Image (cartoon, rainbow, N blue to C red; front, side, top):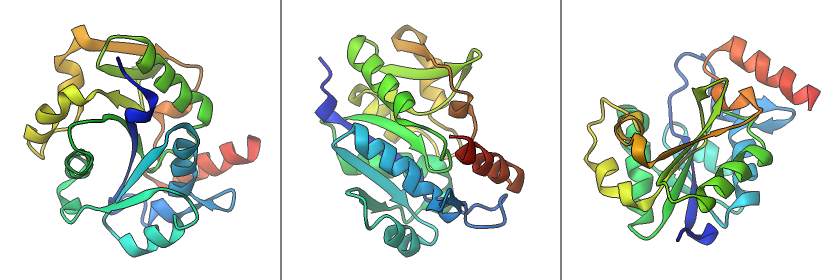
Length: 200
């Protein structure tokens, strides 16, 4: 039986932001760095939150200093997002479940995160994925039973290898928020997120 206190929130925030042209983790959204917004939402829902940092790690740590979250350095962040996933999974150990969030989805809110957590706690499945308009998004819940499988993945692939390979153990959770699909990779994406924040 899953327990809320055994779910660790993981924010993947180690990347280079190459397509943005600016360091997107620290871009302000309504006067708050993007990575702080999602870390704060996770912290409201879960006891333990880890932010995986890499590029400009010290600056991200400084920005997060006011939140009760852990920063975990991924020295291999240039190898891609899966390296950060594996870094977090190794750090957490075998006794916890995982809720993966992208560090560049600043419009995720507590209703979305809490909904995925509640769904995960209420079903036997080891994978819970929110959907909007039948498209899968984040945050993604994975049970500890996938730990060894995650750590064996090659860096050229992603967690979707696991989710696609285990339909029998997957529950999709429809939500009313398109925000679960939208990350922030380009200046146009950033403009969209700033506009969303002003509307909220």
